Length: 467
Ligand SMILES: C[S@@+](CC[C@H](N)C(=O)[O-])C[C@H]1O[C@@H](n2cnc3c(N)ncnc32)[C@H](O)[C@@H]1O
View 1 (cartoon, protein in one colour):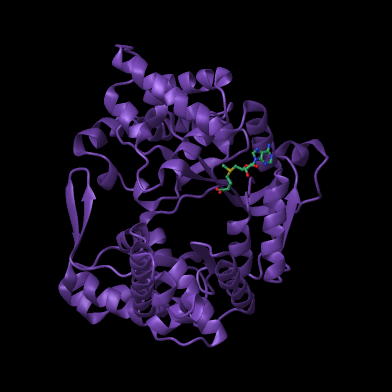
View 2 (view 1 turned 180 degrees about the vertical axis):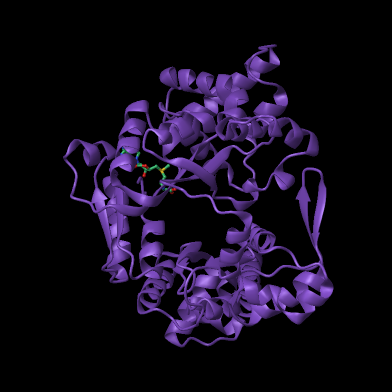
């Protein structure tokens, strides 16, 4: 719901050819580009509906089947109460028994200190000249001046500096983000308790956080916080109060219909059967910074596990039964192994077959993606995986490598760069040493990134049946 440009829906359809995917958004241009992406890869199992959520429950929408999974990312706290009610009604009606809903939203406990500033920017924008980006920029300058003149309820200078700081984004993109986030008339950060109550109306109960580390209190809470929260019997209240201890601003919650909790023994038995596929390297020993101190993944335990995963996807049970792991005397529980490796983004959980080979739908989709990335000069491409039902993003250099592999381009990194950019012609820059330097640096960075992708990313693609 609210599929935007349909990237996830398309990746999921390509990576799960037996799934039947429907994606809804009322934004015409988004749906058009989502359909074009599906068409380019000849995906027959995804349908995009240019509809509102209200249409889906008012009888104006298409006939849809019942769903095993319904997901909404970046939607629920950006729409008004009427729309949230339509979403809940749709979940109530359309999710199968045993189905799972994913709902992400801005968490009120983390965003509350920003509310006075957000409302000021919104009110200021009503009378500001220019577009919304100009309006938020002017509003921010006014807020800073007001704050410097002693406005006490705006939040301290540190808070305003944090809002202004573009982080990894470039300045213009950051202002566009601020306009998008802060000037939205329906912007409504929510407590977990608010969302859990809404979901209860659709017979859904909270199952856990999609960001797997958020489910592990020993990582996210101090011993003192855990002790206090242990005295709260109601799980919804406990989860809500835990948010007051951390800084997590965007909750990604998973709710289930008719969830049947497993005993730890049954859960671990099931997890032993889960597959893991390595998607990123990690240097050992590796330290996870928990609130109360570091948790270290030791070489003698995780070294053999990662070495086995570097060869091929494996079952968790087989990893834990490796002789070197058993001999270490420190084998983690199935739960802790899955938690650490998936939580760190080192491995992808895999349900079902672990064998290699590329699905025809994945091959078509990835070909179309890398070709589009090259044609449009995009900085990022999205590639589907034949293992694990998911996908990975690819940088511009990785898209170039992927496209080069499909089209038989030379694989030596410098030659591959020449193949796409044309050979480096010093004469073309004869009158401008600065441009010459910039072009040389661009090529050097791209060549190094391709070299890295060949050594690190390509083995991952091969293990996951992505190329
Ligand atoms: C912030 S975007 C998130 C897009 C995408 N899920 C993502 O994570 O990139 C919210 C999307 O919800 C869609 N949307 C908002 N209200 C809607 C409604 N009432 N009916 C259908 N789509 C809606 C918007 O058009 C937009 O594409």
